[in-house]
Amino acid sequence: MVTVAERARPDAPSTGWTGRLWAFLRRHHLFVAALSLAFALRVVTMLGYGPALWFNDSYEYVSGAVNPDRPSALRPNGYSFWLLLLRPFHSFSLVTFSQHLMGLAIAVLIYMLLRRRFGLPGWGATLATLPVLFDAYQIQLEHLVMSDTMFMLLVVGVVTLVLWHRKVSWRMGAVIGLLLALTALTRSIGLPILGLVVVYLLVKRTGWKPIAAMITACAIPVLGYMGWFASAHGNFAMTNSDGAILYMRTALFADCTKMGVDPRKELELALLCISVPPDKRSFSGQNYLWWSKDGQRFHFFGTGSTFTPQMNQVAGVFAKRAILSQPGDYLGKVALDFFRAFHWGRPRFPDYATYLQYEFLPVGKVLPNWPSYRGTSDGDARAYDPSLPTSMIDGRMRVIGTRLHDPWASFMQGYMGIVRLPGIVNGVLLLIGLVGVAVRWRRLGGPVLLPWLAAFGLILAPAATAEFDYRYLLPAVPLACLAAAISLRHGVPLRRGAAEPAAGSIAGPAARPTGRKASAPTTATAE
Picture 1 (tube, rainbow, N blue to C red):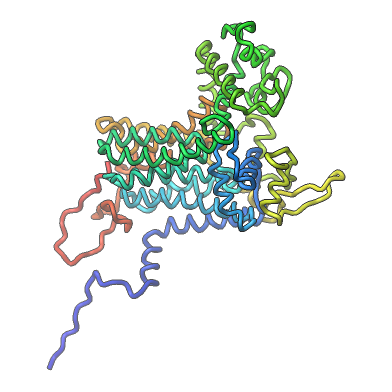
Picture 2: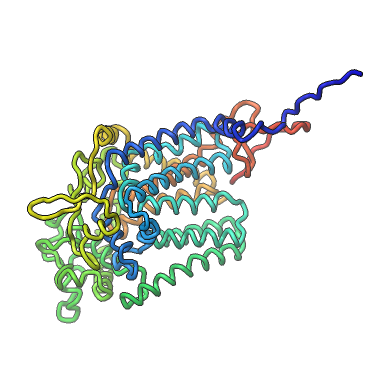
């Protein structure tokens, strides 16, 4: 008897999970290498600056986690809820570690979307993730006890889900709506993103059920939060600061003479008139909101009255009157702050103290003992993490929020001086995305429209409603990269004889043999 060995089939499964893992790593070796190096940089940051870095807003978030029975009047409590979820571990190191993982997750979402949905080759999709993975200021932002990294992940997650599905079901619409609610409760600027998504789905001619499910799923948590806010502060809102922040935007140019404010009839508005002439005012509106300085009137009734419903309402009326009375001055300030985002360098703004809070500094951080809801800012921080060290400074026991450890801290200081994304590069990415929208005008921008509008809006909105700040730029970067990458995808040559993958396959351009007669290569039509 003669036996003939069976020929091995080309589509035979891999010999176990290790074989499949190595095959996966080989297919995505460039991104895995970049992700691993980015993870190592974040470990170095945690070793050098323990347990966290701090910004002026950090203490309000920590107070919200330590005292979760009352919503903040200044900003939504979404990030405080995240801190509350991690509070049983009593560790700011865990908080910053989770945020570094969020930063890496943003890059993973971008890579998967570009590879699986839009068929980019591995090097092209990896290139689009490099600013998120390696920008020193992105890493520094992740290490701050701040809401921005969580906000970035939620926004990118929403855009990824919307672009991933050619047809959005009502169930997926509900999931997207819940993510949008979390986005809005993390930072109130996230609420307009709901409008962008609705517009995009209408352009795609999505049915009414997914849109209705999305709006409903977003509205229920937001309205519930506003009800909770009303029970604590007396007004149905998310914050008592939107009018005050808009007042800050107008403080540099508002002229009560041009506004026609009559002190005899509009005393409340007249009390907010700044006595210093506009041409002699500070270069930053923050000087007329947060601190009581010469000519500043927002603290006229004392610091305890600054973010009340009444003061917020009056400040909002004042700001809107200033905008309508001096539209040219307002648009000039908005344009000035918008284009600050695209400098090659990094000019100091809005003041040196704020500027330094976005740097890897060669000194540690002693937490301030500012008054908080039920205590002090340093007391709240130590209540959250009792392992924070203390030291006797100037005859008082102070809490140390950041301790430096070399050589790790020195390495990150040097790294920040070399590896960063200049603002002008972000501007170029936005221009590429704009071209991508324009060439798809018959489809009203196609899939480029949503990430591009979101990136553009995240840069414009602070300039229009508050003031320029460097940390407001970073959430726009991954979206600008995504829009540019989708715009350029047809200009990226694939390997000869390889086809772009259809949606649903992350394997990349190369298709697995099936044993059937090969058909002509096809291209994924994601637009």
